[in-house]
Image (cartoon, rainbow, N blue to C red):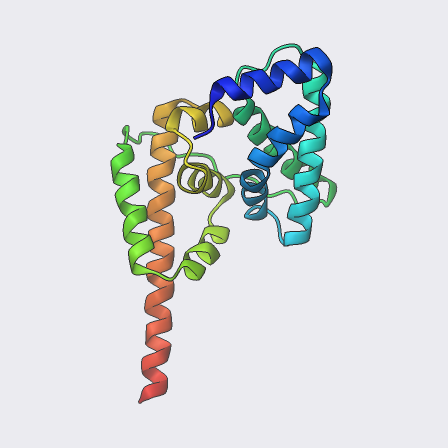
Length: 198
């Protein structure tokens, strides 16, 4: 994982000198992760590219104007989330998140990791990615940040403005939903194959 010390040094160069080269280093380090995060939230790769560019432009302006940023990664993901929300508002197609049900216990990260490993070993990557797109936004965000971007539960909680225990609950539900969706799709496809063989 990226050094927080290096992030702080780059932030200092931006605040003190408005150094575009420092921001270029930040861009190079985070662009793939932010693009992937946005890609699974919008209908096309072209829109994801445009919104990724917009997110980094907004982040650049924010960093030049603001005094303190305690967590660069959290800032970039927060800006990316805002850009996607603005995109859907502008296109009059904003999707609302279903609120999290109450009463769930604190789930261990290990259970979610185990579920995702099962999904990875049992199913084709293309199918998993397709079903990931079908998850509700909140689930998709957490799965991407945890398993693709390898963020910790506390880092995800910072980005989303939730408690770590809440993130664990959502992560567990998200990985279960992904596992159920891929299992259902594979069973359906297997049924079609067997029908055609008869």
